[in-house]
Length: 249
Ligand code: BTN
Image (tube, protein in one colour):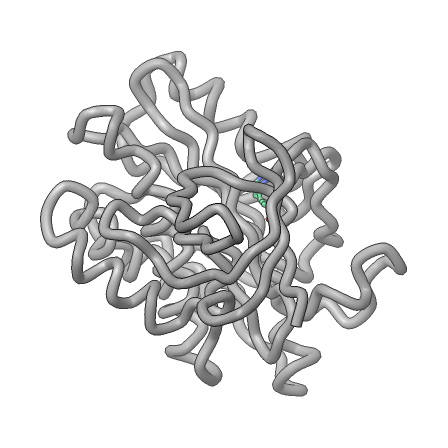
């Protein structure tokens, strides 16, 4: 297993890295420590998750040692109204970190990171009373995915043919996240610019599931608060939260 100790010492303040061999889910580990008073910036990385989860309760596939699976404890200074921006900032940070090593990435709103039309990384943000857990999964050296995700998932290894250092990638993600999360309450426009430049949905017909039911329409872009702008026969809708977003063209 690669050695993460040396990058731990180089992370910007206030980030501190704890390594676990095997856990159920790093999001659960961080939540437990957060509830016990752990400080902002704590990161738990696990070499293996027995019950890693994605959005909507889906399982997150991450074989031991092949990917990055970690969670960051954030104690936001901003009011809760701004917390959805945290999820956007994490997606952008991962995209930028991948670009430090490889090629241009795409962001599938709100924060899936795509490479060559397939999903490379996913983010699950879960809120506590006065903290948020930002869980990040990046497919690094995986070569075989299970059949149910094989058509939609990819890894850096598959796309580049190279072994990428997991510790170096983690350090790059934290570096970018340290900068981007400061833009949640100030300079959010600059964060949005980075997301808009990479958004793979803009200009396409998409289908998605919202709280008020399924919708189909043209994704026109991202609104000033970070919402998805969808045009359908009834007009333009600003959507803050959606699942199962799919490209239709
Ligand atoms: C998604 O795209 O559905 C989100 C995937 C999030 C996976 C990461 S891996 C580290 C952290 N721990 C979890 O159980 N999930 C997140």
